[in-house]
Every structure is written in structure tokens, then in C-alpha cells.
Image (cartoon, rainbow, N blue to C red; front, side, top):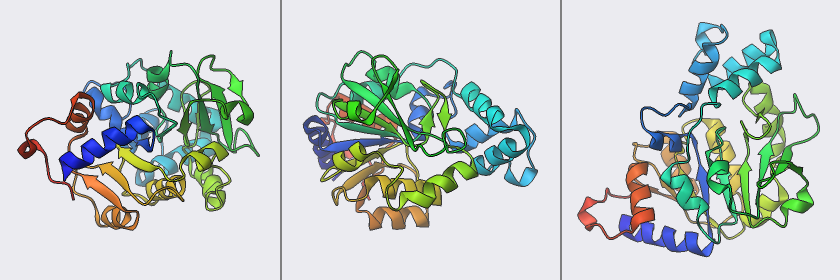
Length: 288
């Protein structure tokens, strides 16, 4: 079943009917020496190393960011986030493989690094739609940027891009916009059910398309809400590369959204996807 799923995913990517949805776990492909935070826990450790927060929220990213914002100012949060994602790192083989797909209309990147941008650099005809904080850009949900010039663009220009990189939580590049504090997400979640914060281009492109979740977990309500709202009204068949045993909430979410779990390490899946699924079938883990 896993072998068949990988072949289907590869063929569907080539046809442009699969939308990759990247989470923080993709950075694990950089190995133990990866200089960037590879999870919310690693990121909150970076933030709390720069500012004291109460012990009970030291491992809660959004609450810790909110505390710093309340007592140290929003600029302190932005500076700490930018420092956390400032270390130079090259795109992983997965980023490069996805960027090389000739008919890829949309990539969703639900983390703050700029590796997808780097992988897409030089590919012409692409751009970014990034979520922005109401604390910094009140009344605006999304900023658009040209991938070629990194200059601000408009929604009308985005309609002409062959590939859209959608970063719902913002990104370190090109303008250091982040959704990270409790108040950031409260603003978005108030409107997300009616899809207001989601770009029209994303709403249009997801129709009848499948999603491929890479480096994602669905263990928190925030992760599940974003995945649900971004994939809403797409196809009824998706995949998630999830080698870890799902939590009860994750298993329920996968079942509700007809997401087939492929229980392979992301590095192994990437090698098979990019290099060809011609390994003996007994080397594959079972899909659940």
C-alpha cells in the first residue's frame, strides 16, 4: 500500500494536483546540526533564553510569546524570532525536489524559516502570500511578495504567478512578519472559519486537489485548526508522512479528513519520492 501511495503522490505532483503542506519537522532533514528551530518546543526555548517568562508557560510557544510581547514590547518578540531563524541554511533535498516540480501551483509552508524561498529562487513566475500580525498591520491579513524581487506585490499580481508559496504564519523573509503570540492567533481564529485570513488564490487552487503533509503533527488544536481550514473544500483524499505513532487526537483528525498515514521517516520518503520507488517492497513501513 505504501509503494502504491508513493507512486500516486509522485504522479499527482507531476500533474499539479497535490499541494505540499510543510511543517516544522521538515527541518529535521538538516540533521542534528540544523541551526534552525525544528519544532515549537525548540523555538520557545530560543525565545525564553532571551527573556524571562513564568515557569508554567516556558514550554508553550504562543503563551511565552504573548508574555514577552506584553512585558517587553512586540519589537522584542520580532527581534527574537528573527534571530532564531537568521542562521544560514541551505534548502533540503525535499525543498529542492518540490521546487523543481514543473506544474506545482501551491506550496503551504506552516513554519517561519525561508528554505522554500531559497529553493524556489531562480524559478521565475512565483511569489509569496504571508500571514501578518494584526498587532503590526491592523486590518490586513496577508502581504504578498514577488519571489523574484522580494518586493511587496498586490493580490492582482499574485493571480499571474505560476507557483504561490503560502506561509499562513508569516516568515523570517523577506519582511520578518510572524503570527506567534496568543493574540496573533486569536485574531486569525476569530475569522478563519469564514476564511477571511486565507488568500483567495489559495481558496481557488485547493479545489479538487489533494494535500501532502510533510513534517507536520496534528497534536495541538492550533495545528488541527490551521490544517482543517486551509484544506477546506479540497478533495477527499490526502496523505501525511507520519512515522511517529499518532496521538488519539491525531488519529481522529486523520480519519475525519481521510488522510492516509504513511509511516515512513521523512528522509526515507524523500529519497523514494525523488529517487524512484523501485526499492523492494519489504523495505517499506506499513501505512495505516
